[in-house]
Image 1 (cartoon, rainbow, N blue to C red):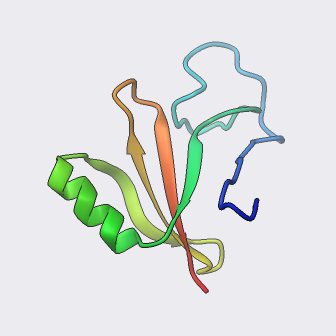
Image 2 (cartoon, rainbow, N blue to C red):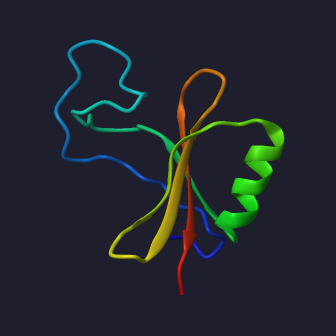
Length: 89
């Protein structure tokens, strides 16, 4: 991860896509871009803001990475997946 908090999440061991929208979450992961991921300071604050704005959380918040982060996923208006991570110290 970059010192500014930027993280680029690439799938390198997926199977090539035959058809369909590979930008959406599917059971078989494809190589390349699948979603944008951002590191945030507080998952609780993000969840409160999402609720206030009427933005549906499609998954989470859940603990991932051997309890090293709390993650949630939403979708933008084009149904692309956006991931948010609070890194646990």
